[in-house]
Length: 137
Image 1 (tube, helix red, strand yellow):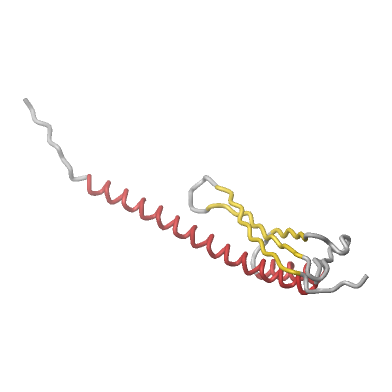
Image 2 (cartoon, one colour):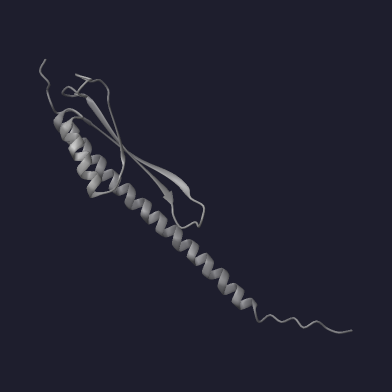
């Protein structure tokens, strides 16, 4: 009976290829996590600056919109949503002294490095503050 020669010389190459693929997958995951952490940090900074502008002005008016435009050119494109518990003048989005104001910044992005498959991700940052402006009637 003829004995089959069991050659195991190629197993090392296969192990190395699998190890390299695993290492690259971990590297891509690490870069994605780092990218999302920096994105979240930038979003928190943007939201903080916007709520400071809104509370100082006491409204979501021209100064607020100018600050949004400036931050979009400085950072990246984002969506802004504003709200308040109650408006002193809803037409101008004015909030009376002591009223709560909220700013929400939303960014739509995708998970990178997974090949042809794109995974959409929505990141959101919300801050609230108290109006520092007194509106006379």
